[in-house]
Amino acid sequence: MSKNLTILVSDDSILARKQLKDVIQRHTPDVTFVEASNGQEAIDLFREHKPDMVFLDIVMPQKDGIEATKGIMEIDDKADIIIVSSVGTKMQLKAAIEAGARDFIQKPMNPVQVESVLESHLGGN
Amino acid sequence: MFAQFFGSYLLNHNAVSPNELTAAIAMLADTHIKLGTLAMHMGYMTAAEVDEVCFLQTREDKRFGEIALERNYLFDEQLDELLKTQIPDYLLLGQTLVDMGCLTNGDLEELMVGYQDESQLNEEAAANETTETTTKLLTNFFREAGKEISEYALMYMNLIFNNLIRFIGEDFTPLAPVPCTEYEINCCVTQHITGPLNCTSSIDMTQDVAVAFASRYAKMDFTEFDEYVEASLEDFLNLHNGLFSVNMSNTYAEELTLDPPVQETEKVLRLTDESFVIPVIYPFGTVYLLLTV
Image 1 (spheres, rainbow over the protein chains, first blue to last red):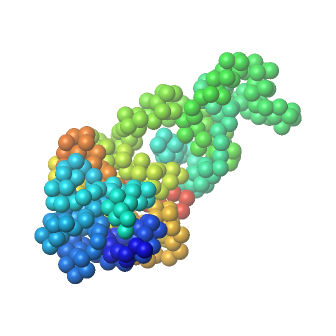
Image 2: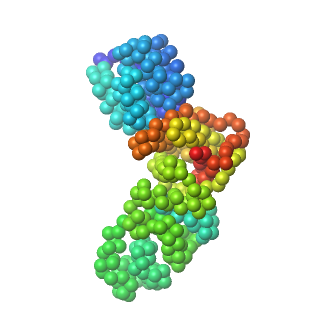
Image 3: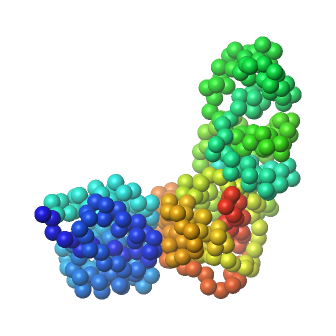
């Protein structure tokens, strides 16, 4: 039986968070979500909830997704962080990977790609 | 994109009213191109010959091509070619306006020639849109309004019209850009881009239009203006600007920084001498694009 997962979804758009949560929930029904609407809140909620997986947008107020990735990696360098953004330039990808992100999903989000990332990151969970 | 700008051309030349155009655009999804419109567009038949064949079709149970062949208005090879031809999308809009009685075939023939001349369009370019052909179209669009815009701004506008087609729907017509230093807002979202290109873009619309816009963007059935509708507008602008920054990085190796999109709270937006607004007419209402580069 799969264990109940906690996933942190951080995006300043309530719509983007809902759409991502819907896709995740269809793939992995037993999941508890924690939601942040900016990078600093994402770091604070990561510290509090220690989620199994983190989805971060890049363009966010207070701290962007790259800064938030660095902040989360300082708390746990094994954190499983996925960047979800429309700003998919090579430089942003490089910055995200150097900061510690494990994967990148380009917006507009393709549910198949999200499911594929969930498969490869959550494996047998 | 040629269909959208053909609508703008028709309005600029007072060939149709905004209401007629909006009604025609709304009908496009259920309309198919007719052989007569295509034959006229290719220069194989005149408007009078097309009208005659259409009239004869009301008397004889024959296809358009059959009658045109019998009357020697078309040759077999021309008919074969027409049946295989890729269709420029603006033809469909013109034909719909003829079907609605807003234009005659003669008007359409004349307007198509004028539009092709003004846009420097040839058959192949009209049927196979490329960034190069749409950039030329946009350059003319701004030039007609007395505005020269930079290469980056053209790339920006090219992408935003493509993104409107892709994420909201192709049933729109942009009106001519208007310089604007002060703009009274309804429901407005703004995003700043900084870096080698400093640009501020906003989209504005009434709450009712926002509900319809958001329903199309999010593929959800919104019925009232709420936080999800607001977020849809922000998402659209952020997505567009994000994709633009990717294009700038890939094409010019220029890295841009995007601020998060924000809802405007003031009643009037203060702009600069470089700012302009483009009203974009959809069947559900008008969306205003504001850009300062």
